[in-house]
Image 1 (cartoon, rainbow, N blue to C red):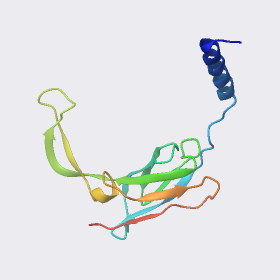
Image 2 (image 1 turned 135 degrees about the vertical axis):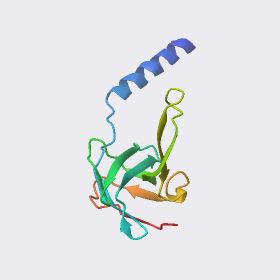
Image 3 (image 1 turned 90 degrees about the vertical axis):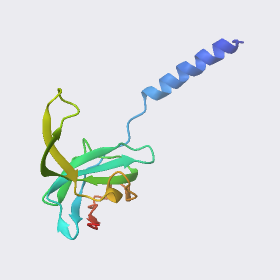
Length: 140
């Protein structure tokens, strides 16, 4: 009869062998539109943060549309959604990541914080559903 260490080693080997046959959950493409204040968002990013063990992802918004292909898409689950769109202010500010004296263009996010850092927007995503996920965001 194996001792305590023997059982622990056997359990580790069994877990490793069982893990070898597991596959990742299937990813799917995701697409949709993003409007801000009733108008298509010219450019930005839409981010999907997994809340239930899925795979987080992000995609580019162009002319109010986004599409993330299946190889980079999310898996089934619940996601928190963030939308960002940076706009230059016309000012130059110190570049904190650059050398002393380096300047960069100042930008501001034109999307209200309630749709990005403080977003409560959520979706349930099913890769088999093949339906768009559209977002109509209030400007204020």
